[in-house]
Length: 369
Ligand SMILES: NC(=O)C1=CN([C@@H]2O[C@H](COP(=O)(O)OP(=O)(O)OC[C@H]3O[C@@H](n4cnc5c(N)ncnc54)[C@H](O)[C@@H]3O)[C@@H](O)[C@H]2O)C=CC1
Ligand SMILES: CC(C)[C@@H](O)CC[C@@H](C)[C@H]1CC[C@H]2[C@@H]3[C@H](O)CC4=CC(=O)CC[C@]4(C)[C@H]3CC[C@]12C
Image 1: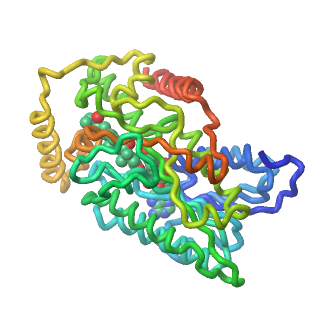
Image 2 (image 1 turned 180 degrees about the horizontal axis):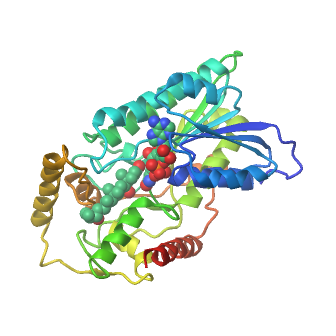
Image 3 (image 1 turned 90 degrees about the vertical axis):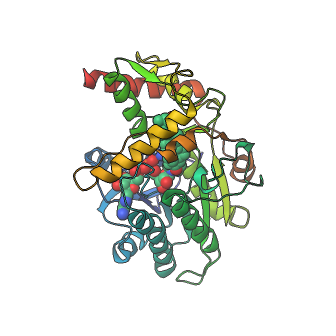
């Protein structure tokens, strides 16, 4: 960890800094980056919690802005030493149009890259995703794979397509000359399914279970492994790689890193029950009641209903053809690339991550009663 006596001279910008991951990155930077003089938090929707951060030694600058607006991005980037680009439209439930997803995730990332080049910011960390790799449209499993594991990364859904395009743009920008004549250094982090305090999908599962009398119904075989990672460890990897980008530019620049930790390899639903079970929910076995063909039918009916209702209201259930296919395809990673390249080790153990997440769900429980 950097010496606490270090001079505070660095300016960081976190785009999407008020999101689920973004907030944890902001808080982790304030706790573990002693060289910070200013932390800029750029987001379409600023959170009220930012105000409480303005009493410390670091200047926290809240910037309400849109990454699809190049001039707003350039104004936020100008003068920053490091940009952590976490802003994105994370939608696999049909809430946003493919066009909007592309505008935010791809054009928004282009705007961030160009802003770095035009204003002279040299270090860019992009929050990519496991989805850039898979699961692919053919449902091929990716079992304990790494950054070099061969895999046919073919996608049709707008979200993984946009993340793959954005990641490619970031990696291709590595080495571009920025204002002042020095090279841009970029890298991309690929978290698996992030969980932890503030995870909206976990909140949705919890509320669904409350509505169903404390029960959730299994849709996915326990044998299907799905990679998950605690949000605090994702935030920590961002802080660490941002710190090492300058010192290890030749090694880290232009690289991708899966982001995972010691969270156990389980099915998506069984993993969620690690937190929802201690909060009173139980997972009902439905093997005989809900064969896969019936789940697919229900998923397609949900998609049809969403389309029919769209002129009237947004109907966006957890179960749709894409989410069912994702959940039903094994995708787990096992790699030491981040450890070898910039010394990443999870900051939070599985036990600590689980305890913190359960505490958060229980706090929701209190607010739900
Ligand atoms: N949630 C997950 O399991 C995973 C997420 N990721 C990536 O992590 C990043 C953050 O994701 P989450 O925190 O889960 O999502 P989130 O939706 O909680 O956070 C995204 C943030 O970006 C902001 N944003 C959206 N459109 C914007 C725009 N046009 N201009 C400025 N800000 C905008 C939102 O207001 C929000 O605060 C995303 O890039 C996502 O692709 C990667 C792997 C897994
Ligand atoms: C209704 C049941 C079929 C239930 O099991 C569906 C679960 C489903 C909502 C999730 C299963 C896999 C998740 C995705 C995965 O973790 C990878 C992701 C990476 C990201 O960058 C964003 C989130 C997500 C797409 C994540 C979304 C929720 C699932 C599809």
